[in-house]
Image (cartoon, rainbow, N blue to C red; front, side, top):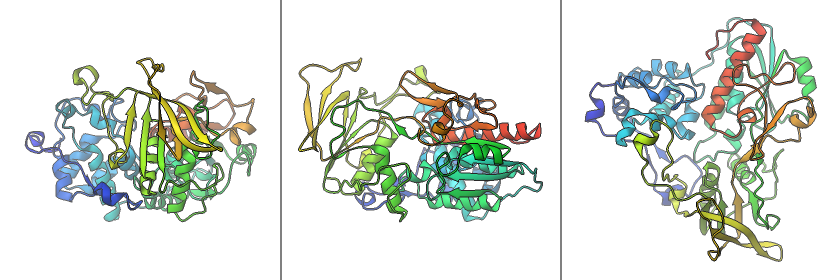
Length: 484
């Protein structure tokens, strides 16, 4: 695929970033796009590896046909490239920006630490397709007369709605917030993905006949029983938004917050919306001129770091209970799977102090206001090591240790006792449905995305939405032509 000897002749290059000193002054995307010839050279590096692990189950949840569209880009056939990419992924401009790219970990060239720049090429294909006018509404030519409701407009709900609309069904999407996108819009900062990309897709979907109902909290404003009565099928894509409980003393101090309300607020500010939100606290949270501590080592924690710097934080410290990973993994032991190794996000590279193998013992304060975070070192079993306690100054602290399931105040509350739920050993509660038909224990109700599988990646949500759409189409029509 690509140029047969490209991987021998061309070095790996990815899009560069604006300097940290410049990018922390704004909330816009800071990636510097590569030119078309540069992208084509990177696509040319895709080798004829025999077994392309990049688009197998280890590399890409949506099974993107990566070697195929690399070859098309190399040969300057951008229209065929976006058609190929869209055949597996409804929103490559999303995944090209925010996916951690397990496909690159699985690339055969990663055995030499120089995988094909798949994520860079994917984003370039989507952006080029918009530039050339290749992305436009694809309304169904035949209508089935069936009516489907989708609860939630995150990546799972949007993918399912688009697929069902194109299958000829009348699709209505219900979103609690004032604009579509779910945590794509309100959780992911604009410096990682600007929201005009969501707006463009929403307009495309409206052109395909999908109707969006925003500001409607299903289970509160509209009863789900009513949706079930009025529609032939209902798909629940409510996401996983309830923060995991930290169990750390002092969380009641002023200045201690869960991560997501902070990110939602700032995204609403950037979008010129009121910071009041249906599901989140609305007291202003700002990091300007403050010492900030972020508890957690994942993507949400990293987003808090980048947001705090852009708000003018004096210092940001990130605490991770896990040991510092090795700089380089043992390829022969883990490839083609995602490896545990030292990774530095763009936000962390902006000046964060990272503390590894550290437990958060307590948030400490005076007169009810946070002044510091008490920590200690831990052993390999995450047990505190006596005598290693220390306190980090903090005016503001964010808890970013994950999510344990959907909000329980709306759909789950209304369907209590009817909807089968599963609680795992960490206390996460998910709606029970398999990954073949996505049916719940409630008649006419399907589910997909994080509400079913637990917190995960945008690309997994897209896959689940697509598969659930296929299952619904097959259940309503007896057969389906939607891809699996």
